Image 1 (cartoon, protein in one colour):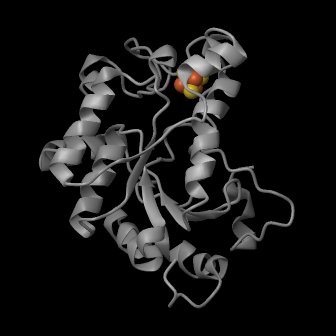
Image 2 (cartoon, helix red, strand yellow):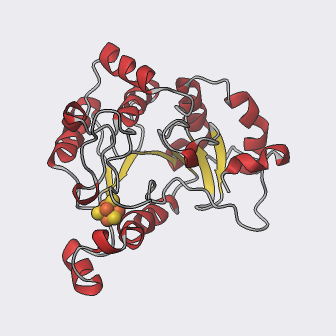
Image 3 (cartoon, rainbow, N blue to C red):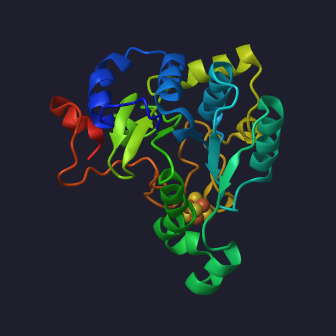
Length: 254
Ligand code: SF4
């Protein structure tokens, strides 16, 4: 965080949080970049809303930081999209990996861990790498939206992320799928080819399938399991963690 930011970050959140609910995504991005400088980065798995966020960020600050958790189990189409992003926006995506290669994971945990214990697999390949990455930042920016899952329905545009101990900025929290796709088409934003093949939500190859007509857009994630989240966006308040606005404590997702 910039040195000129003199006051405690949680106080700062409390000051802006309510007003931020009325901000545009661009206003939230501007606030994040001005407040945290080089200690804020966008986290993305390059879904449709993530692509909108990246395009918006490029118009606010050309040298924004962008990282992704590369589980090494992603679709070829996703890797192709990463190359297109680097070329179009002139940035280098910061790729974060598990400490275990896929081969080491198989050796230590057995074959096809994702089919037996997807929570452990996600912890090894997503949550631990994310925790490591976030430890070098003061804030992170995501493209999560309230209407994606029930666990995301109470997300604030700006919030204290008690799970990882930093500020979390969610500029697109109140956007709809329709708005996302309108922006993509209006601004000629690149997107994952799999979206044209009935994959509205895209993760690892082992845990993502196309959805059938009428199914929930996230029905194709972890099919066969009750799991709907990889654990990156579930905020778990810890005892003694200050909440910026006590009257809104329930909104922090317990
Ligand atoms: S989405 Fe599946 S393969 Fe990817 S890390 Fe989670 S459990 Fe493992």
